Length: 394
Image (cartoon, rainbow, N blue to C red; front, side, top):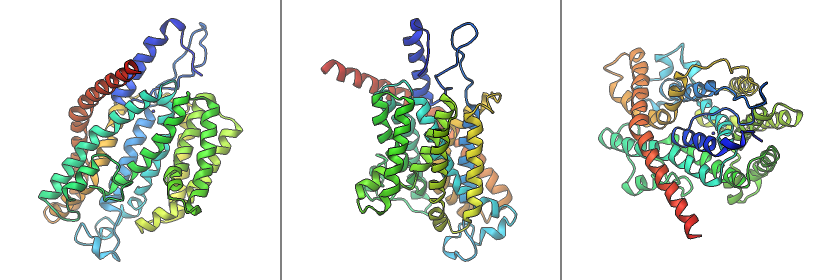
């Protein structure tokens, strides 16, 4: 989302950090700080660059959906009424690769989840994931359904029974459609959280996370040809290696680099690049070589972050920017393409796309400020009380 803290301040420090993490999903620095000259601890700087990368990845995906998706040979999917490659001839080639922002998200998630879970109980991990994922998601499901009901175009609203099922975030496991197509990534995230929580429950250590990477990676390698649906679900082969890359990068950040971690990261690169062709076959607009170059450059940037090369970047506004990435991602696709469908004939495309991005960012800020933060606070209080009751009834 190992460490040394002076004994007298352990409880207060843990409570303060947990409050930050659970309520705001911040990105704290690693907890294993090197000793200072005074014999105490020195806190590593907050990783603001990761906040920035989260928003960059979300914007990449949005631009891909708005101006980098449909070619002339796909006449049945023209949200602009004609090939978008003709409307944005200079931007289209770059925007076609924006889908890889999803894979960037997975790597960042592996890094941040490991970081924010260190030294915490499984219940704290569970609460933090619930209050981080669900408030904005519930709003997005209901708001998107309302928009698609009022203005059906590229997409139409689902039946009420399916909308209600979507509120669980488990619709893909049930084989049901999602209110918005981008929600497919949440199913991968949820499976990662569930199995990683088992490790969190035992207390995270360097050894345990390394073993998790090796065991989960092995399962992901054999699952596709196993013929065992449950194994495929647990192993999550389409996304596991991206998460594993993030886990290895965080271990580098916390404990320093070594050959074992470089080996895990290298294997994760080898295995995850093999997942790119499947995504390309779905998107139909980009190449394996181009996506591999982008993914490799991104991993190199993450290595630089893990090794502390970006620690000097301490722009606090990036934390706010990062907080917009999740609601922006949830809201941008179905609603955005619907607006393009209805407005593209009346507004110049060169104005419509940036205006749409700005409007979605503004909406995302409103959702974060007036939905995520207050509802997360209420959920945290309720779940914390519920777990306390479980302890009392034990």
